[in-house]
Image (cartoon, rainbow, N blue to C red; front, side, top):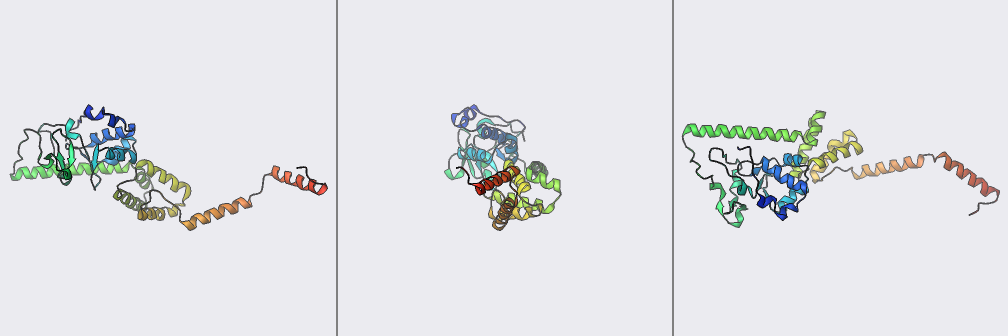
Length: 278
């Protein structure tokens, strides 16, 4: 896969693109830099981390159709082929073949979804002059080895990116397998909703757990949020009521400040001696 990526000013200088937030524009650039030779990227969380972007920034790119996202979370850069063309000896076809088959390519090089039935089938597209792959046994074996190498490298990069997420960084520091599994299930549940928890949200959740929850309640709170697909953690109703009652009892039991006590004593004495002027 090539290391260099190109961008076209037809996209980046367009008023529609310039109306995006700076973090959304940065996310578009990082997604493009992480994309393969067909414009597909499965490192969305890592790109959001690099761009200091939020879920709202990703949603803005999706809403304005600068990227398409598939059910498995993989995205493709819509205008990829307007700027990126590779020589036949440098081009590596994407491993996301099923997603590729759902796209068409217009005459201007823009991807469009297959449902629109516009343009040429992308799955059959190859760079100009690209030779047909030989079908002999050695070539097939070579392709299989190369594919395994690419997939292994992609998996290693994915694990490395995951380790940088606040949830996993904290779980790893605690060496708690149960906590790690609970966090994984919650992240998977949120990813299924199409709005995964970003790094900022994960950090805020950890801060809330530390501040408001006893350590032995963390896993149950995380599991409860995963089951209900909540974007944060919440105390059970009875726990909240008990905490509020305890707080109220503590407030009632507190002695008033010495100055207030002295003032009340003086007022009481004045009332006994003849009243207090209003």
